[in-house]
Length: 317
Image 1 (cartoon, rainbow, N blue to C red):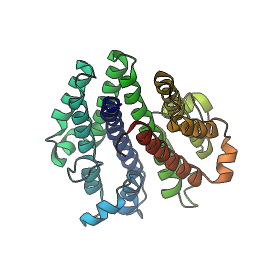
Image 2: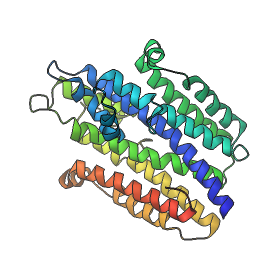
Image 3: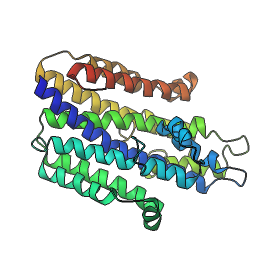
């Protein structure tokens, strides 16, 4: 059990950190896109403050004393070695966990992670700016896609694979809920903006940030509406980055682990309870309950599942 706990820990967090780096790039990308549609009266704090809120870094950033502007927020969330949640640190942590499990992962997985780390470890803001802000965000997402594809294509379907995928989907569901909440709650438009060009652009930016803009067009064939965006990103199980899809994958993986080891883990039961709530929910019920409150419950539920996984398998939390 000790060996299982150690391997599960390293592989679970390897995948979570890699997904976290991608999700941080998506948070910054949507903030950047939304800043392009800001009005003259919007301060840089109003444009970039929500990125710190959704990343859970508002307090630590405030302690640095830096102004809340594009350069400082991007630098802090992307590259700052003092920020444990920065993209740089997440990629470094993913690599260190992978290095400790070289015998459990494939050569292709290690080479993908190691190459990514070698490219970002000496990157500073000036080099990032020369690369292009959007180009950097796209690079992070592409490296995450590459690693995930290599994992799926080369790793045996054993317990090690399952724990890596559990980390991925737990992190992804949390991120999608946070991204949706930052637009609806933190960036709630003024009355003059509702239904206007700025509001439309910002919802479109949110969809693009989770690679769902074209999917929205195919599914709804209509102008972008908040309720439909919420339905797509929360309730539709056929959307790869939706909360429902992430919880569905997570629940299935925890069931496989439970069957493999013949034990009734609390995390699996908890995941089923939360997944069922999402699976049978209707978007009108979500809005009647309160979208912000519903999304907050999702984030809290994901944290509860993470804590239960840690207790079930002896992982640090």
